[in-house]
Length: 111
Length: 119
Image 1 (tube, rainbow over the protein chains, first blue to last red):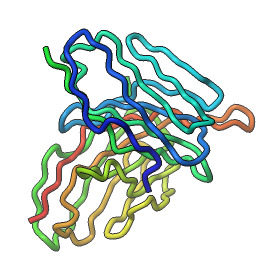
Image 2 (image 1 turned 180 degrees about the vertical axis):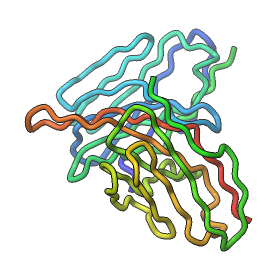
Image 3 (image 1 turned 180 degrees about the horizontal axis):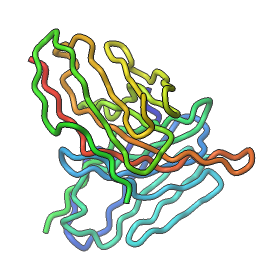
Image 4 (image 1 turned 90 degrees about the vertical axis):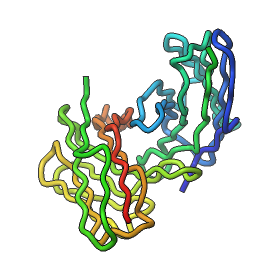
């Protein structure tokens, strides 16, 4: 069962621009995590935001969480060609501690 | 750095074969997971294990079984492979901590994936 839906499904920007991806989910959560996946590879954890946090930063990444709207956004500032990848949000919460993934946003950064 | 390795990057098997996918992690993590990833469906949890000799069904366990005899190793078994099991298989591990009554569900560390084709 998928918890999250991401928007947009695909995003193409120029190097140096900012990229924003959004994630909506359905049930209460313990935390929300963002992962990156380069083509045909495993996932790499980027950042985790807990349900009692509203914003978190890590390098060029900024994540916000609005539990009242059940939504999160990931902002990548000053994007680089190397940021080209799929980005997934994933939530932990409810009756289990499983990580439930959204369907992902495919980001293409043009050099 | 945590390292999660999977036994094969690419695997081709025939319908009806028994298939073993191995996953090993080197950071003494308690929890381990098997997912499959398909276009348009995202990542779906097949099985997970809280600790040695423990296993729990995920969202799509049918046609699969698992084994966790040692803490560092989590095996996924396709008892009789079928063409609809052609997919990318991803293994992950996670440390499990509690702070009093609060459980920390931290990040998962993923292996590179095994792309399985069943002919």
